[in-house]
Length: 389
Length: 142
Ligand SMILES: [Zn+2]
Image (cartoon, chains in turn green, blue):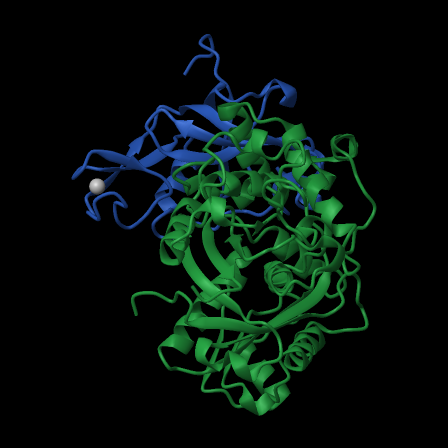
């Protein structure tokens, strides 16, 4: 297949509640997301012949997708579980699109959930905290997850003169959007001073530069473009997808300040035949504020080294040149781990359906979503649009 | 030494065992590919530049430069709490490869990108000695 452009559409999107949900197991949330998205797409479970999930940290299964199919009593002909950290959501979407276009299945349910807030034992939490680095050559020195991203932030500050206040502007923009989103966890406005005065976690990253720890689930249904008339909502088409994989461990990265989002973005834009300035908004992976700044540069929304200036003055807020993370992002909406960027995907569908209410990007036609996993390691960029071409 | 036992101790593998033995002997060893004249770190069974297996262990100068760093104020686990605040740094070695370590033996606020550092060794257990770095000072012998 030479291109996936316009051949596959998202015809269902739904989220569970998010936040602190001790009354749900991760499996319960995953199934709840599936039930909600089937209602959104107005289909019965027998119409689903493909299932993709990601494993839960709090309630892991040996073969997670099989376990979810069994729980739902569905019997797909395409069934897999994917794990690529924060890049999982869009990597899954890429695989699902390819499976549909190649005829492996016709209608795919992607459902993901986890309970990082309520469901982790102390041992599991410790394991999660220390699982991001190399077991011999990084973890023994005591890096925390924020510390890994602080290394990227500091390198960017040293190389380009980026400031901590500029990173803070990203947290402020996400919070502003969350305040317009009734489902977001954090809905009290914050200022750059609030971020700068919050507790230092790993210099230069403050508490409010760090994303949330949440429970929650989210799901979408995808099918081939020639079936979209069977579904009630306006379809959202996949216009371009690209991946880039640079390293696993940050100490092995070719560059600390420029990532393989350059490759994923270039591939996605080439497939779509579009350019960064065509995007009406973007949802960029924001586990910590510096990732957004680096992604803006690497994806071509501004020049390398100019991300700091780009995020200032409301430029990435609603009404600005490129609204980013219109739902509030991982920083202010919710972050249940690997499923986190599913909410960026369902938000994009909501925006492109024109149903985002007070936070609607006026006239939104086309957008980019980007996920990164590891420590700026694996990248997937997706371009979505209202029109097939 | 007991203070380190609950930390995340590295577990040497067949390809990394000579590196960790070097640390025990207070030598920073790097793999050197004689086929393409390149140092590499971390240890591998092949040269990641040219895929040759013509690798030998050479003692490095032990000197490098801080490429980036952070000051951790919230420890990764209780075993590291006594070290707070501690510096995690990415250090570019004089021979080329980059490695993660801690910068010790100085005020954490004095660490900057570009700081010249040299290796020091910190014994954690009977089997494991960790390579750490301190600001480089000409007058220190060795
Ligand atoms: Zn070689």
